Length: 96
Image (tube, rainbow, N blue to C red; front, side):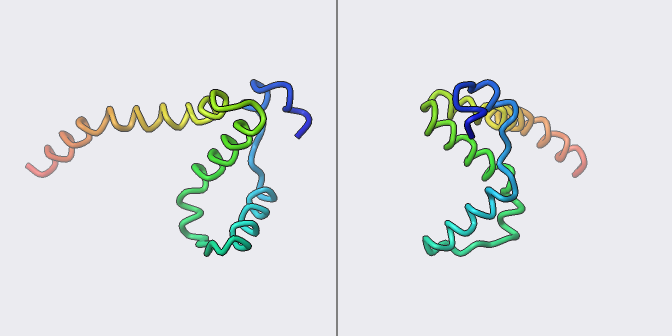
């Protein structure tokens, strides 16, 4: 989209992978012999959309911007991993 080509920060804030873009992606996958599973898609929808956005960023600006697109998810995963020991403790308390 020309609105974003020269403004990565705007792209990061405003660009969304639309349902239409996902439909096009699904059709492309089918032409490549990929069997589409709607249930799995719904489970991984947020990740897939972010992955597509990241790949678009890589195509336009390069690897650094691609990684920057993934940072919010990386931060969420890192925080979740930090909380696992606490969650395990809470689960163990419930078992007692």
